[in-house]
Length: 207
Image (cartoon, rainbow, N blue to C red; front, side):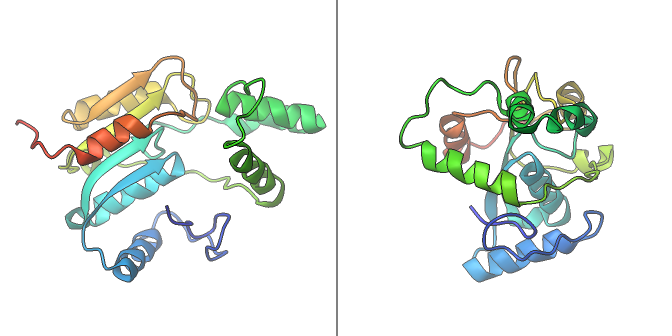
């Protein structure tokens, strides 16, 4: 799990444009630093776009893709327009915005989850979110993704058009394992087991 450039953590504060190869060059450096020539990638949301973009530009370096609600396939929704009035309402409004993305909060957090929740709240108060149009892969780009893919999509995603994501994957990447969870939102917890099973499955897909 690597801090992406421009995001919270120990990463560089710069945010390069998305329509060039800056992020692919950065991942080249990351993999070189780790001594890895080929790897599988797990990406959520914008991290899903990053993994897809790298697979498009460096197919020889990507073994598998496991993506949760990835950007870059279906169209982005104009969530900021919906969220703006709520953000003017202080803490209550912020809570409502988070609920639309992450779902209703549990009545109480388990002790092992509290540090993560506190970290996310700290990031939300101090980090300027990325507000930008994320480039989408073309039909040709998707058709050239000749590698095993697991894509988990939420039917109630308020940030990305999940139906279009499913349609484009079905049309252009028919070998992808697409799992559409009707009641899930943009944040889909408890996916470690199916992702680990996918990543450790050594069977070769039948063509």
